[in-house]
Image 1 (cartoon, rainbow, N blue to C red):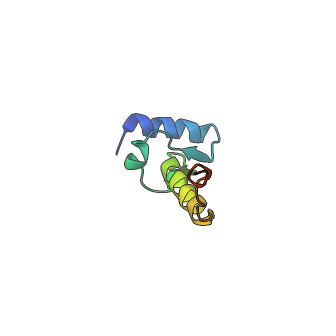
Image 2 (cartoon, helix red, strand yellow):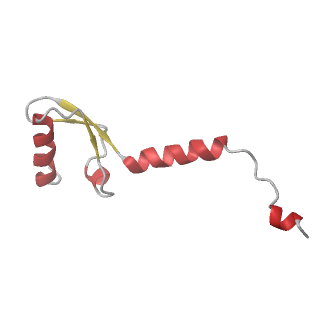
Image 3 (tube, rainbow, N blue to C red):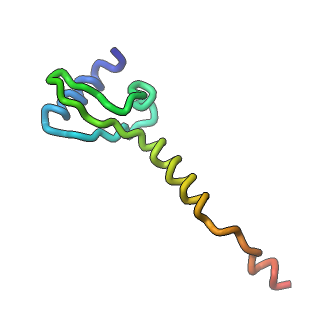
Length: 77
C-alpha cells in the first residue's frame, strides 16, 4: 500500500470524524488518485486534489472572461 505513514495519518483523521481530506502536497494525489478512501474502520472520506480544483477554476474563469480590449497605453499615442 502506498505511503504507509500517510495511510496511518488518514486513518487517524477518519477516527477523529473527518469526512473530507484535502491532499495539499503535490505528490499526495499521485499516491491516492481515487476520490474516496475507506479507512480501517470502514468509514469513507472524500479526497480532494487541490491542483484539480485549481485547474477547473482557472478554465472556468478563463472561459467566462470577456475578450481582451486594447491597452490604454497603446491608444495614447
